Structures are given as C-alpha cells and as structure tokens.
Length: 474
Image 1: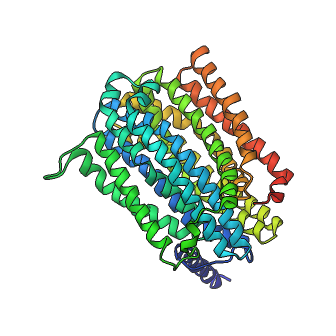
Image 2: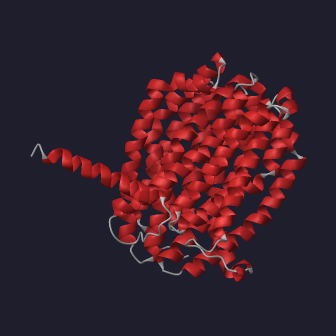
Image 3: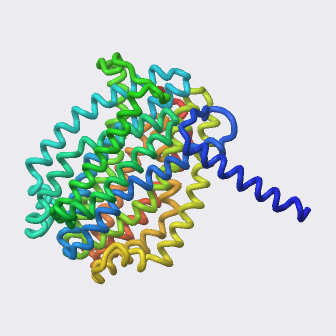
C-alpha cells in the first residue's frame, strides 16, 4: 500500500494540472453532460482569473495614486468610482442578459441564434454609452460636488472624472463581450482579454502618473488615461477574436440588423439586471456619501478597503459566473435538476474559498493595507473596515452564487426585488442610524454592510429553493 500511495498522489496531481491546462485552453466543451464537478472546474478557473484581473484595475489605480501622497487624489478615485457604478450597472445588466440568452441558445445547440443575441446586445450598449459619456464629460465637477468632495478634490480630480466617464464605452464593451464569451462557455477568451488589458494598465499607470523620460507625469489624470487605454486594448483583442470566425460565436453581417423581438428579450432581462446591480451600487454611493461626513481620510480608508475586498471577492464572483453559465446551458438542454446541482456544488466551493479569505483579512489586514497606502490615519480606517466586513464573507460567497444562478436562468427580477429590500430598506437606513444617530461613525457603516449582506443571502437561498427560476422562458 505504501508503494502505491505516492503513485496515486502523483496521478492526482497530474490529473489536476491536466484539467487546469484544459480550463485555460480554447477547446470547446459540452457542459450539459458528464461530471458536474469537472464542468464547474473548467468554467470556474478562467472566470476566477478573469475576475482577478477586473479587480486589479481598481487596486492598481489606488496603489499608484495612493503613493502621490495626497488624500484628495485617493478620494477622487473613490468618489468617481462610486458614481461610475452607474456605468458598471448598465454593463453588468447587459452582460447578464447576453450571458443568459447566449447560454440558453448554446444549450439548445443553436450557435447561430447565440451569435445573433450577442450582436443585438452590442447595439443596445452603444446607444446607452453615448448618453452616459456625454453627461460625464460635461458635468464632471458637478458629479464630484454631488458626492461631497472637498474643493481641493474637485480641483485636482475633474480631469480624472472626465476621462473615465468619456471612455466608458470601453468599460461597457469589456463587460459585455466577456458576457457573450462566458455564455458560450468560452471563459478562457474572457480571461485573456482582461489579462491583456491589465498588463497594459500596470505598465502605463506609473509612466503616465509619475512620468518617464520625455513623457511628462500627469498625476491623478494619468491614472485615468492608463486605465482607459488599457481597457481599450483589451476590447480590441476581444473584437478581433469575436469577428475571427474561429470561436464558438461566429458573427455574421446579418446579426447586426436590428431584430426587435431579440432586442426586447435582451432589454427585459437587462433592465432588471441593471436595476439589480444599480440598486446595490447606488446604496454603496450613499454609504460613500455618509463616509464623506467624516472627512477625506475616512473616505480614502473606506476606498482602500473596498478595493481590497473587491480584489479578494471578485474571484468568488468569477466562480459564481460559472454557475450562471451552467444554469443557462442546462436549462436550454432541458435539464433543470442538473442546473440546480451545479449551483449547490459551486456554492460549496465558494464557501471554502471565502473561509480562506476571512482568515487572511483577520490575520493580515494591517500589512496588506500598509502595502497599499502609507498614511497611518487612512490605514486605521481601512483595517477596521476589512476586519469587520470579513465577518460576513461566507454569506457573501454563497449569495453571489445564488444571485448569479437566478441571472443565468434569465430571472433577474427576483434578485432585484431582494436588493431593493436588502439595501434600501435595511442597509442604508441602518448605516445612517449606526453612524450618525448612535455616533459609531465609520464603524457603524461597516457593521450595516455585514448585516445587510447576510440577510440578502438568506432571502436568496429561500427563494432559490422554491425553484420558480427553472420555469423562466427567454
């Protein structure tokens, strides 16, 4: 037995790396049959890496801007990102719709209809982004003032906000096209586009913020330039492969002719998906506004903590994206029970991951924050936020999977209603009460976040178990 044990261990290691390599490849897979654990792994690995890369954008900006030594610069990034969630909401809502429709058509073994659905979502994206970009370009100072920014923050941050909003089309397309790839089960392509975008951003950030040789330093404005250019390069990579005809999605010229029934289906899913995320994101904007009452230092600490949380939670969100694809494709293949099994299996893996994240923040919050920001006062707020909010991470992880399972089925309405009650009727009032009325300050905001997210997850599990999402037609 002792001679066989090492061999078994070696075989398992080889099997793992073989599967890992397959997950990163572009090889087509059928996720409606075979091992569910294998299907979750093959989808989750590239999706986790994709989400890691999405979170790196915000962390890289905060890191380099934080080293400028101005709290107003960090505050600008935090407040701009808070309002930019409107763009993220639209992008995520549309990508939810694209993922759900494309996955359902792929499950039905109809790739032509999947391609058509994906291209119709692009038409909608261009229309919405034109409006948002125009508003951001002309009203950037007003946006910062509305969020409670100090006069100095408005002065140094207006150009940053203008560039980020003006380039919002690249944010929209990066999310949306990746949603199309994910729905088709081509998660590795979504991952690669974000790797490329982030590498460009990491190289350009220090160059454009601090300057290099003949290239002048643009300060905080350089951070916006670097992020927008990096995302733009990622989008060009996506578009090349989308139109190459070598992927699961093969775009034809007629796919761009407006198809009103499909546009209506996309809109019906997307507007509730957008509302779902916007309701949650807008509540975070209000929380940022409450934090602004305690000064730029508190806002900066809150912003550093949120970006670190995003960095660690987005891999969990990536794993939950695997559940969305599996639900959509298996419902399309008329296998609702397999769809449900996929969700619970993914939730189990996410729970294990979130236990690890909780331990990391409980034990190493201070050195992690110190690496991101050198201001001791900012550090104290950020460490407090990480340690308090980490108490709810296990619930966050399960809630992500359940929410994305609803979305993958095309049922964006249920999580939207949960968010209305959870965020606006519970989290926001509780944060105000604890922070302002009971004088707990920023600590009250952090406690409210944990309690609200826990309640939202419990409500989601109860409704998911009722099974009405299995009967949604899209």
